[in-house]
Image (cartoon, rainbow, N blue to C red):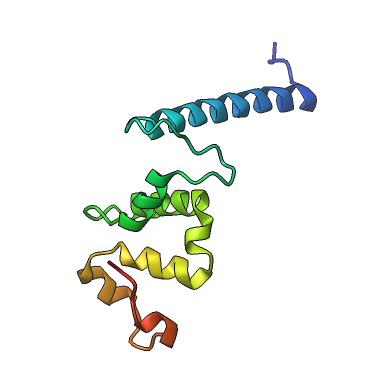
Length: 122
């Protein structure tokens, strides 16, 4: 006897429940990791800016050769603190600032726009 086929409506409900559960688990994990330092504040996705996230964005650097982890964390922080890197050129400049000098030379052009020539990297 072949297995019973689910209706689209039933499948949609199952998927929605699992996605909601996964999002809830992710939000709980994020809230727990934000409170590890004891700051007592969490970023709930609104306009509230978490000072720890702002500080981490300004000090984020590439660790080893894990560019994927660096990129993922950079984009998470940019989403949480959009006013700190409001334009595309600021995002690019801040992203490049996190790389060590040996990599920066390979990814930056010798003909940068005038606004990008004076780097604001710490």
